Image 1 (cartoon, helix red, strand yellow):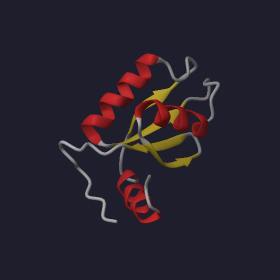
Image 2 (cartoon, one colour):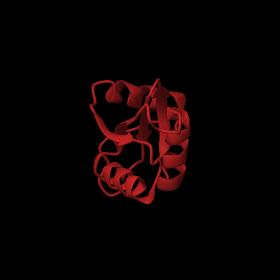
Image 3 (tube, helix red, strand yellow):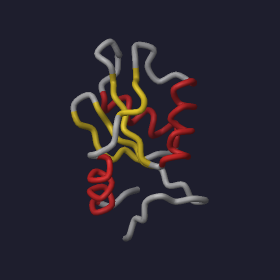
Image 4 (cartoon, one colour):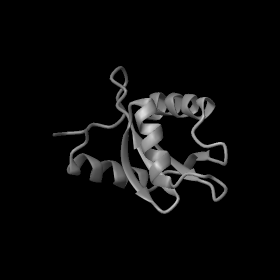
Length: 97
């Protein structure tokens, strides 16, 4: 669980990031979960987008993916959301507190 300071720090880092994955009409399937899991392992922090043809809202997709990958939802704004999961072997972001 992230503290508000940690969440604010990660939001600032995600601000400059590009969206790397999208949730489409097929929703949160096994393939997408695998891609998100791999991306979180490599990057720790990822920004995603929910397409208009998706049956899920950004918040629903963020929560579903976070539960299935063991990640934390950093923020949800409009159709975009940010997920974070610490890589204990090779951490990229230093979270104090």
